[in-house]
Amino acid sequence: MRSKLVAGNWKMNGSLASNQGLLQALVAALAGLNRAQYAVCVPFPYLAQAEQALRGSNISLGAQDVCRFEPGAYTGGVAASMLVDLRCRYVIVGHSERRSVFGETDETVASKFAAAIKHGLTPILCLGETLNERETGITEAVVTRQLDAVIQHCGIAALGRSVIAYEPVWAIGTGKTATPQQAQAVHAYIRARVAGLDRALAEDLTVLYGGSVKGSNAAQLFGMADVDGGLIGGASLVADEFSAICRAAAAMETMRV
Ligand code: PEP
Image 1: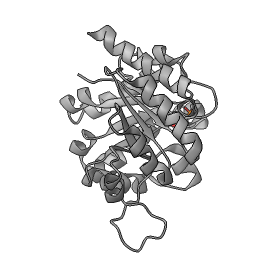
Image 2 (image 1 turned 135 degrees about the vertical axis):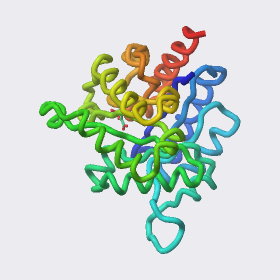
Image 3 (image 1 turned 90 degrees about the vertical axis):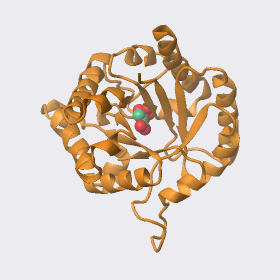
Image 4 (image 1 turned 90 degrees about the horizontal axis):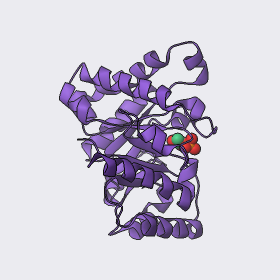
């Protein structure tokens, strides 16, 4: 049975001073809330700080990107083995900002996914269509292309060691959340596509929704059959808001018991 996961994506935000307050507040707010799973994906320079602040808590640590190469002459790169060294459990790959701003292709994303898997990290693979792609009716074709690139490169078994995040680009940071029905339709599509290759793996696959999730809309989204939690951007920077989202996820798990 899949359990809910809420992962925060801090993006390129934070400072040593502000992180400390946020991390302490989250550790306190989520203590004892053990039915769901939680993570924060922080900028590279703050991984060590976050690792220390989260030690002994129920919040896992993640990074927002990883180099596809093994350690070596790759100036500016951060290898998967380094993230493991810093006790990361998760790493986001293929976020739409990496794809659109930094020009990452499906192939680049697939090789980053492979690097993460090789080192025992859990990649959070982001998939999602732009507004124009949605309006022209090619949402499923876009997520299929993004997903298939990873499956072809890494194999279906590797997908079973990952988390998928469906993040419609038009909903990221815009305040325009997908309706629970819109999210559910794409999540069900992704799960069905994976089920076509491995039914049991698809049943266990965690598929998060990302795009303007807030405390006020999390319960409705997480209540959908194929929505297994959220990848949270802006709201993950506000302790009360992120905690409210985590509580919504934990409440869903409680209702299932
Ligand atoms: C994200 O960055 O992955 C995201 C979903 O952002 P936001 O929640 O701010 O839309």
